Length: 77
Image 1 (cartoon, rainbow, N blue to C red):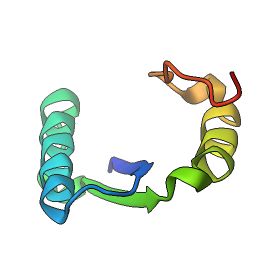
Image 2: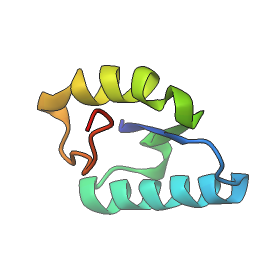
Image 3: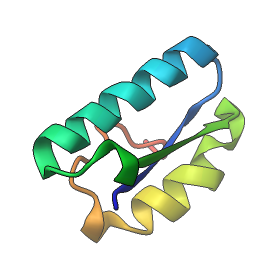
Image 4: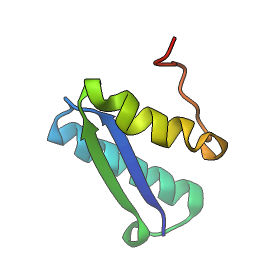
């Protein structure tokens, strides 16, 4: 039962979000061998000004040991 949570800066269209969810779903099916029915994808939009406090600190810094693809930026530099 993979559940994927995607957090990003606001501004993408509904069509882009639907396409992203479809690609993520197909990738999970191909990689993990799960069924389409077992996949869920949530997309949350954040204002650019809120990103560091709402996402970077709690989700990236706060879970560094479980992140498999780390970002190539540091908002504090």
